[in-house]
Length: 343
Image (cartoon, rainbow, N blue to C red; front, top):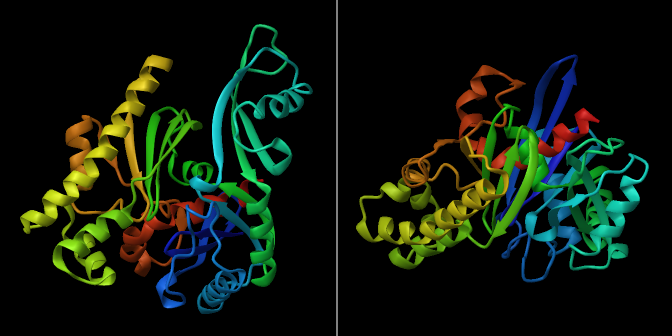
């Protein structure tokens, strides 16, 4: 199965296979938008993510060819700002009644007409058929426009669109292995950040925020008068532990609002569920920012990890260091591909 993550500034693709209980990383590849086009691949302002079917499919074909990926079945991941995630309660009912009830209630929680979206949902609490068991539903709604765009890109890339999936579901599958813990999973992308609460392996809540790694790069670029590429390199090498006082101070000022939002989410979860979050996982392209993991741990008083989405795969040992370095940025693509192997 192939998993495809069309990010704001890069496209990442992984090809994985399963033999019995084992999983193998067959191939992987990445391409930056700046190598093909002057703008990003995605745009929040436009409400969707495609600049051009041509440029996106061209980039995907380049990765497929360079990485020698032959598998045609692909799952596309859809970003948080192109989906609507919500959880809600239903009264006790039979399994046969649940789909119609979900469809009926969806219109109360999503800003688009239900007829203009594709719905994906799962029961995260309760048992259908038990008259004493209310149900809690986690719902994801994807605008049909996004579905159609994915279909066009897949066709022009020579791929078969196996499925599309919300980012939050994919990274949960890729990173949360311990089904007994409650995890706060923070995905820091180039254009937005999602804070997800995963309780015993089930995605319970997903919150989206404007904080993005691109803001940090822009700040460094402005302070030092450097190009975006040069600022990105300095940011990734020095981060919050930079010896340049202005750089570190500015990055802390930008990171603090995110820490505040995480605090609010943790408090809200505790008040609703009477349950503490056990650990915090950082992922996304900004997760490896020097000093970020330690700062989160210090302020939030929680154990903070940067999990490796490749940890359960078989691959040549020579790739170990490279994969560990790039793993946070590939969590979405790996999670999408794993979804295809599990069905």
